[in-house]
Image: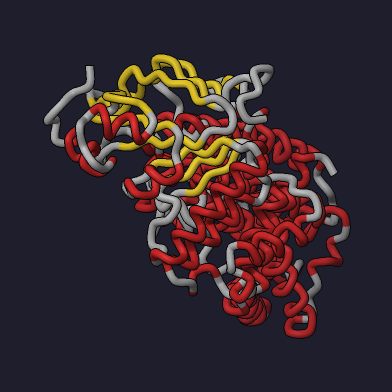
Length: 251
Length: 265
């Protein structure tokens, strides 16, 4: 699947714009991600990362512009693609009073996952949540919840996985294992991963392609190494700070 | 199973899990209808000694309160089940999945039926030994009245759900307020002709008025009035259709304004 020229790009966005009255949240954003890459949207608070991801999912209707995901026009036919996509976000949650297994079962049915019991058990083992499958989701720690949300996001073995802060609230050891897990998932499945993250180390390690956003606009793009070199810095975090503080604007 | 039915089933399962895991919720479903029946049963016993009207059909007040609760529970079943998704900040994940808004509506109506059957069914059974009155003796007309009042409750519940989706959880009290606004006009415990003349045309615009009038005709005269039933069905089709349309419109507005990601306790 990775790089298969016969397949349409995983994500193709042209002239994407979102306005709330006078406020411009996303302003003429265009980008394309081929299949099988791990890409990131980086930017400070209010840069437009979550708004962009919401429009990719069809949760938010753009004011203007085109969004194609896995070859599907998300403005017109989003239901043709939604069973092949999934996402996790700290801004959304699962029912607190249901157990982890109940929550995952419901989403397995929503996504039409075949042999869902085996799938849930496998994910529970791999993401180390098996011990609390019977516990109410609301009783879990923040780190445990993050892993459950990741299990939810992987239930349907998505071709495109969108993740907002995928390792937020995880201790360094668990976060490292989750990153390795996601990278292995991407390698073996050929899926496309798109992250919005503030963890620059994570982005440097995982991503092939980084889009820098500021005030709803794309201000730079490249591989992590290219960006570091272009800005004459040592880490992606320094590049991020340069852009966020408007010290240098990419031409 | 088609994808649509599977997703509707999943959303109903979500609510059944919630009920199964919480005995206070189950108890609450039965508690209020039972309290109402007990209270109106005693009122019936008290007035039976002095009211010639009531003597003609002694179970009329108990039947009325049970059928009113069908409408009330039908409304709450839809609106409260929808609020559960808002409280748990779950809408973003639900609608990033293949779930369609119309499938969510169907699931809300389905779970409302289950909740109503548990709550009102329990109270109806309790009335049999307590007051020697079984609403089930009404026979097939009961099914017609139950269905119509349930649909009226659904229409109000969906309207409330739409308003809360649009204006936020600050509007959630509408779930309790909206239905009580139509209660005095529905002629639950008294004929519509008791209302002032100028208010009676408004009352006849409610499906519930036709149902309760029809119920009294069955209980007092032993006559099933098809015209009243037809009127109730037509009005229900109009209101439920309008409520579904309004909910879907509000859902579209929610997608335009980014409301699906910003709900929560």
